[in-house]
Length: 158
Image (cartoon, rainbow, N blue to C red; front, side, top):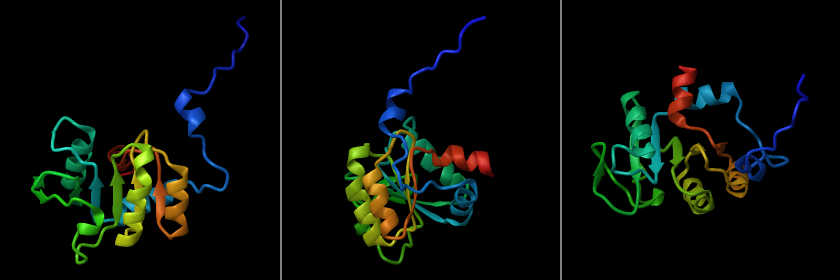
């Protein structure tokens, strides 16, 4: 009989284990967020149809969400006007979720804009984790989801 061997944590998990005091969103909250949100600002969306950000946004759009693309260039993605920042989006467009497709270290300014813009949720896609930005968002009253894919979670829960 082979002895059980304890495997080391994957490098990413070791770097990004939950921080003490950090809230995690439970299944009920995830379902509530995905079921009641209508407008998703996708920060870092790519105009290339084979990129994850485009695929997730296209899926969400097909499920009835309004997508608001946010990136420094381009005019239109998925038939929607592209804005260069969250704060550039007109005030009459209510942003429920800010879906972030940026490097983890680039998240803090996005969170600050999400707070200024009055978003309800900051969602960091798979592989994106920033505890400091998450704490800042939570302190401002926003819900935070980290290291999860909106598309996969929506498909799993609905």
